[in-house]
Amino acid sequence: MLDILKAIAREGIKFVEKHDFVRIFTHYDPDGITAGAIIATALIRLGKDFQVRFLKGLNEEVEYDKDDLVILSDMGSGYPDVVSKIEADTIVVDHHIPTGRIEKDNLVHINPHLAGLDGTYELSASGTAYVFANVLGDNRDLAGIALVGAIGDKQKMKGGNAEILREGIESGYIEVKSGLSLHSMKVREALMLSLEPFLDFYGKEDELEDFLRKVRIDGDKDFEELSDEEMYRLSNAVALRLLKMNAYTGVFNDIMRGRIILKSELIRNAVTMCDVINACGRVTACSLGFALCLRDSKYLNKAFEIWRNYTTELLERINAVRDDVREGFCIRYVIMSDGNAASPIATIFSRYFYPDKPFIAVSVKGERAKVSARGNDSLKVNLAEVMQKAGEKVGGRGGGHRVAAGAIIPADKVEEFISEVDRLCCSQG
Ligand code: C5P
Ligand code: C5P
Image (cartoon, rainbow, N blue to C red; front, side, top):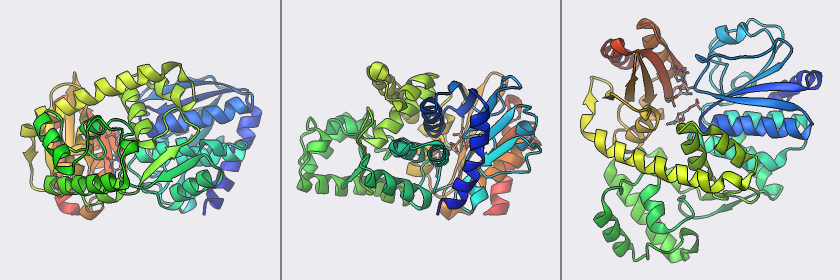
């Protein structure tokens, strides 16, 4: 099924052969960091030099020499005007919906949507990078890293992702263990710090101890050492808790699909690796996450420390803004006056508390506001279009996927923007 995409990817070989130095610009989230690392590893194995930069989006400056090869990863397809202006040879490795023609001859555009595949749920930027890496050489050992990116973008193990998973299992790099998907650490900590599933135990220590007593599990036991019987009891209790919380039904599939174990990686549990890389990206330590993907163990302890701090801060923040959620006609939203937590807050609130309407989180920082919008398949609202249109209306810019999109807008236009988003969601839904 990946044949057409592979054929497109093969066109990139000529650019890689032509250049000795490559500038990789990749997104700062887990899908972007893993995609960048997969491309970088493939280039290292070909003896190429590269520089990697992590960006929040193409709103930021892309610096290059005309003679370089520029690779944009996990970005580009939604910003054809910006890519058209890049003078150097360019390869775009992305999975966002292409929003227009890129006017440029020296371009190779590798995107599942251009190969008849689903880039929203079934192949992420890291999966697309994996396909590209494997036309450049034998890089099948990177299958696990490709799946970490897909997990970060909340994709399904279907289509292209399922094919990468199969390839990883066949070549012995990946194993799937049955049972609940949680971090491989002490059960108490795994339940408390889990963001996917988010279980709402933070700040509720008594409730957590009561939960452990009822399921008859020692919280100090390592999650990987639970007996089948204990795993079964825990899975049921977690599912019940999520039902009571009003979680989105899709969550259940995700957490019951077993644990993807990456046999060659420094962090063997794929969900844990994803969360650690995510935390590094969020605190502008992308290169630590990148180093983990390159199997450099020097920063492993530091990366885990960042993950612990980031996660507890985020959980505190979730508790703090819970009472600030406002309701429009067809959306719910929260406006935060500081921090950069819009993206994870929107993801968690829409998946675990309010799956019945699109959820919009805004964090205002100086003169600009960062917006994250999240929905799900049942809502029939295309948030990429909503963010694009409402963003443009107030002099900002937005885009993304149908169920997960975002925008950057002027801070003094937040109320106007929210009204427009509400109006557009009502007209679409
Ligand atoms: O730029 P990119 O496509 O990688 O960002 C997607 C973002 O949307 C990620 O942060 C991911 O966690 C989130 N997402 C989500 N729910 C979905 C799909 C993506 O929260 N169903
Ligand atoms: O930042 P956040 O995780 O909410 O982004 C969700 C999706 O929206 C990502 O795919 C991101 O690339 C996209 N986005 C965009 N333009 C923006 C902000 C976000 O295309 N200005």
